[in-house]
Every structure is written in structure tokens, then in C-alpha cells.
Length: 253
Image 1 (cartoon, one colour):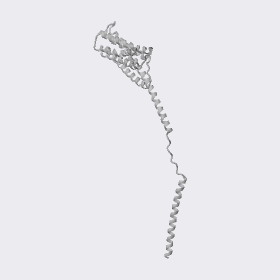
Image 2: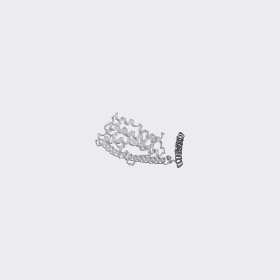
Image 3: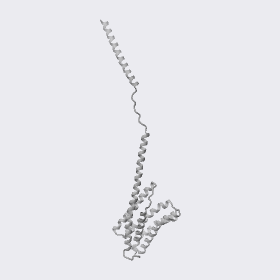
């Protein structure tokens, strides 16, 4: 776990508190130190992945920690430049766009990882990272004024790079969301088809309800015979009764 690529990834998290001190220590040298540490940390973002692949030291710990370290470093730097007033109010727009995109992509990657689907980094996203890291490095070091040939040159350069990074961030964030949405729709359609197929197979295997058969002709004939017998008995009884009555009348006479 503690190989060179993973140690480089951990170092990006370790330097964050040191860089964060530039909010409280307003010294030209300290701004220079904070900016330099940020540049070194940004370089390790490329080095750790390269070394892990070249030395065959890829690990689950590195895959977990690398995106977390990147986001912690970027978010901390954005907070510092806003807290120190290194950009004007209108430049808060790309700052918010970058923050929202980081949250969006993290959520999408977490969701897609559950279904074992990756979200590969595009070429445009790499350009975005380059402009973003350049903007943050220049802005963090701009208060030092060691290299100010023209007044406000570094702040202006950092602001322009920040706006370019903000535009690229919006585009790449939309691309990632569109790809994820297309995958989610395909998964939902597949589930709907599977559910319909399962219902269809259940309907085929389900036993058909027994149809009540009409009473057979024998039963009907038996019923008719019984009713005829009953009627015959009643007729015979009535005839007997009438015969007895006639006999009585004859005797009386």
C-alpha cells in the first residue's frame, strides 16, 4: 500500500494545511512557498499515475485516494484565492462552476462504480486540468510580487486561465453527465424489457382456470325420470282416492 505512487498521492493531501496558512500569514515569502507547494502537488498528480503504471504498482488504495486528493487540493486552493481576495467578484462564477463540476463528477463516478462502469477522462478534461492548475498556481503566488514585470500581470494571467478552465469545466461536466444519462436510460430500458418478458413467461406458465362443464345429458334424463315418477305417483294416488270415494258412495246407496 505504501509504495512510491501512493506516497506521492498522500503528499498532495499533506501539503494542503501548509498552503492553507497563506490565508492567515500575509507574507510575500509565504505566498511563494504556498504557490510552490501547490505546483509540486499538481505535478505529483501526473507522476503518481505514471509511476503506478510503469512500475506495475496499481492498487485499489491508489484508485480510491487519487481522485480524493485531487479534489481536496483544488477545492482548498479555490477557497484560498477567494478568501484572500485574489480574484474579483465576477470571477467567482468560474470558481462556483468548478466546485459544482467536481461534486457532479464525483457523484456520477460513485454511482457508475456500483454497476462496474467507468467514466474515462477525455482529452478536453485534461486541457481543463492544465488551465485550472496554471490559474490556481499563478493566483496563489501573485501576492508575492517577486516577478511582477507589469503591475497586475500575474493576477490577470491567472484570472484568464481561471475563466478558460471554468468554460472547459462546464463543457466537460455536461459531457460526463450526458454519457451517464445515456447509460442510465439504457439500463432502465433493459430492466423494462426484462420485466415485460418475465410477466409474459409467468402468464404462459400460469394454469388456466377450470371451465365448468355443462351438466351431462344423463343427469338431465335422470332428473326428468324422477319428476315423471313423482307425477305418476301423484296421479295414481289421486285415482285411488277417487276410486275409494266412488265405492263409499255405492255402499251408501
